[in-house]
Image (cartoon, rainbow, N blue to C red; front, side, top):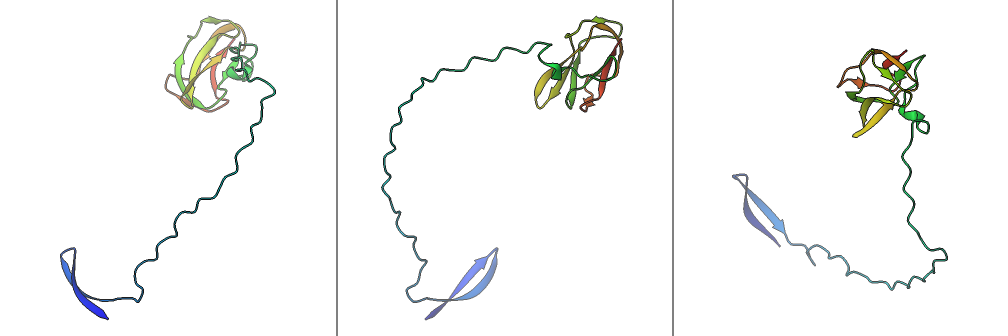
Length: 141
């Protein structure tokens, strides 16, 4: 048996014919099935768990990755990032391991340190500059 209906869609009237299906309706999903879960065996801990010691901060000698090593006296960017701050000026003496530039990479500030003692001969970047790994930031003579 079919029935006719008038349907309005977005202000536009339509005449539709609907036929009833025997046993009609949408089939219902089966009821949830609960399966028994075997209990987990308790495993005694043979070794007591102790918190790990915090790592000691890296020193200039332990962290050569912080200092870019270019050619003789060149300080290169160890990773791509943006120059946030230049900590030295041309003509200024620096010591080995002294921070000279702050780079922001992956939302973290990274110190670039002087690989050797000397005098800053030339600064090759400006604050806000984007640098790639290996780009020369400054020259120490």
